[in-house]
Length: 264
Image (cartoon, rainbow, N blue to C red; front, side):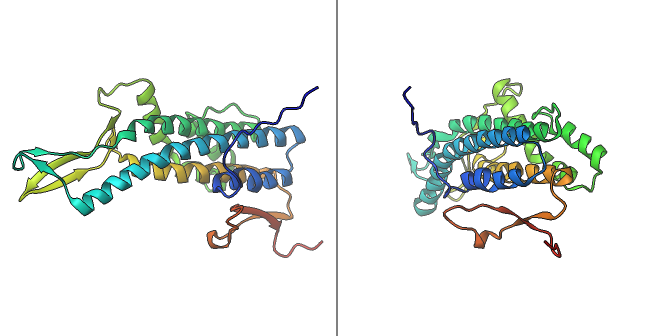
C-alpha cells in the first residue's frame, strides 16, 4: 500500500479565518456535551466553511486592491479628458465580474452555517431561509436568547447575499449584475465618480469587505450561541480574546474557561 500526501491549502493559522474556524472553534466543540459523532460532523463542516471563506477572501482581495488603486490614481491625477474635454477617459475595474464568484462562495458559507445548526439541533434547516431558522429559535428559546438575537440582528446582510446570488443565478431585474466605474461631469471641469456597484446600487468594494467580516464572525458566533443554549458544561464559559491580545501566529478569537467562582 502506498500512502499519499497531498497539500490542500496554501494558507496557515496566521490567517484569522484558518485560526478561528479550526483551532479556536474546534477546541470549543470538543468541550461541548455533544456526542462524538455530532462533534466530528461539526468539525468537518467547520473545515468546509474555512475553505469556502478562504476562497472568498482570495476572490475579494484582487477586486478590492484594484478599486483602491483606481481611487488613488484618480486622487493623484484626476480624470483625464480628450478633445478639449468633450471625451472622458473613464477608469475601468477589470476584476469586478469576479464578484460573482465571491457571492457564490458567500451563499455556500451560509448553507454550511445552517448545516452546523442542523448538526447541533438535529434539524433540516435550509441556509437560504435564515428567517425561518430565526423564527424557530425565537419560539424555542425566546427572542432575548443569544441565538435568537444573533439570528434576528444578522437578517439584513444575509438577505443581501441571498438576493445577489439569486439575481446572478436567475436574473429578473433586467439590469447588469455589476456596473463598472462611471464618471459624470458636474461643471467647471470637475467630475462625480461612481465606484463599481451591484445591480441594486450596492457598492461592490464596501459590500465585499462587510460580507467577508460578517460571514466569519457569524460562522463562529452561531456555533457558540447554539452550543451555549444547551450543550455546554455548567462550569464552563466562553470568553473572547481582545483583538489586540491575539497571537498573530494563530489569532483565535474565542477560548474556553471556567466560570467565575468555580471551585475544582
